[in-house]
Length: 599
Image (tube, rainbow, N blue to C red; front, side, top):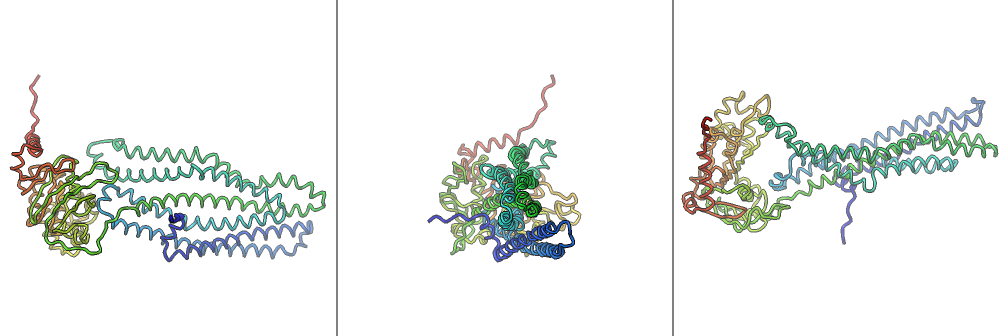
């Protein structure tokens, strides 16, 4: 039997844990507070009744003072109970939002690292942190207001038909018009517009984060903001959706809604005009005036109740959209962990008929690739862009898991190893390493949290970072990214190399590690490589073929397949893809701009 889908409220309360009881207590108190808030209106009517009954001898109305004090007490107690209700719902809401963030982060910690390559950090933060914040309004205010409004409406319906059903019906007519207007704005096909609006907001957040990260490129190349077309398009799309919903969808219904709720008294006047002659004829004009006074006072509650419902409904729509975004985070794939982990025998790496296809792609990025790297051997992966080099390397530390075939480390399928053991055996240096906004010391020690200052200094020296530390105001204690302290791409690579050297893992993966380095930095990085890779099993990915000439084995990948394998000299003589790549590389290296002949 198909499991019944949970409501959005049930899903949210599922995150509340033991604080769910506070939500229910807060809702109950809110209903009581709203009932108490209605009683002063009844007391006011009792005062008006007594005064009208003895008019014009007002002194004979002996119950006025008593009803006045009763109204005051009911109002104060109602406020205190409502305050207690909000205390409960707010505490539950804050804890629920905190639990959403914690559970979301815990789930993301179990996701494969490759997931974060295809999901921008700005988008994930907006989905998790922003969506969690939006649920606070629903749990802290909207649910309490909904319960209070239900109590108020039931009380209104009862009271409005107790004295004169005709005047009561005229007052409720305002509520009918208001509900119809709100449904026009938020119901039917317009409900989907809110989801589209939130999706546009998510995309704008993602594009904004990427734009901010790209500002250095804008400054370097003197480009305008319009060079970031995705960000501009995201802003325009969000603006169009917001404008469409606010003006074309909500303007007329909201005008009708506000007119009906704020002018509920207008519906009462025609009814009173029609009823008054009959009351005069029956000699019950005093009773008619008393009833009219009651409905005139009570009609003020209509606008309050409907306004609460409108804001509460909007909160439910926002929370529903927020839950969908939270589900997108909670639906991230998780790294499967075996219950019976195996220990690798050595530091060898082997691909056995490995294929891998990215989600949503039709063509495999890796297609039946097989090769072996012996312990202590250095193997280079080369080939044209998009050939599958980085994808192949990412399968070793389980950034992704192979679609078919298997990747082995030390003779053990990486999927049968403890992920922590696997990660401890591998050090990475990527082409776009990012450093934390922290000191050089803390950035390097991230690879080995228990390292001493001496060990960190030794790693920095081995990574040829002496000139970097010399120019920093506080040496290795200088915080990067503050007070104008920034490092070039090549300098960041050397600090990242120090991190890898400190980790001292037996397997090293170098992915275009010199891509952003100038010749001077590249020379220093190459010296650091000698320390980092000594006695290690190394997978090296490089476009600069000069860096792989001395490697023991070169594997050429093209369109996800292994097309050639061998040493530099062997591959040169085959007159295959590598030979052509080597010829093109040398031609590019030796290319010079010559002065043209004078005209």
